[in-house]
Length: 114
Length: 110
Image 1 (cartoon, rainbow over the protein chains, first blue to last red):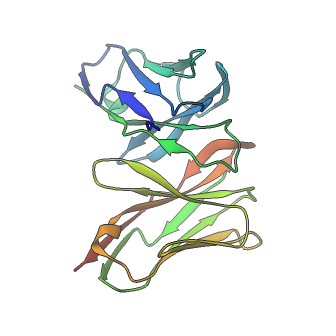
Image 2 (cartoon, each protein chain N blue to C red):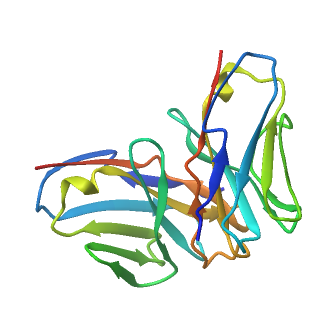
C-alpha cells in the first residue's frame, strides 16, 4: 500500500506570492491533517479535514486555508507569503481521524520564502 | 490549551545504553502520541497511549494519567535510534488538534 505523498517536496517563493501544497493520503484514509514545523515553534497543527469538511483548525491567520476533495486528497494554500512562513509543511492521514488511530505522515514540503 | 514539556532537550548516549525521554502535559487527555523524526524530516508515529504501557521491539512507552506524565524508553540503544522524539497531546477539546512538545534530540554514538 502506498504511503502518504506530498507534492512538491521543495519550493522557493518570494514574499507576497501564494503557494498551494498537495497531499495524497493512504488509500482508504478519509482524515487528513496538516502541520507546520519551524525551528522556533516546532510542530504546530494547522487544520484537519474529513469527508471534505474542515473539522478542526489551529491558531493560524486566515492566509492559511485548505480543502479536501471527494477522493480525500487535500490541498493547503498560503496567500501573501511572509518570510516567517518558511517551514516544513507536513500532512498526515488516518482512517477516520479517531484519537485512537495512528497517523501516517508524508515526507513533507519544504517551503522557503525569500 | 494544553502545555507540553519534554525533557531532556538533547541527549547523547553510547550504544547499548538505556534511554529515557520524559513528557509532561498540563491538561487531562484521552491519548498521547509519541513520534520519531529522522534527519530529513520524515515522521513516524511510534505509539498512541491512553493508559498503562506499550512495547514495540526495544521501545517502551508508559503513561501516568493522574500525574499527567509519559515516558519513552529505549533499551539497548543503537546509532540508528538517533532522531528527534516528539510527544503530542490533544488540545482545544479535539482529539486531533494536537499540541506538540519541542522534541528531544537523541544521538547514540557507536
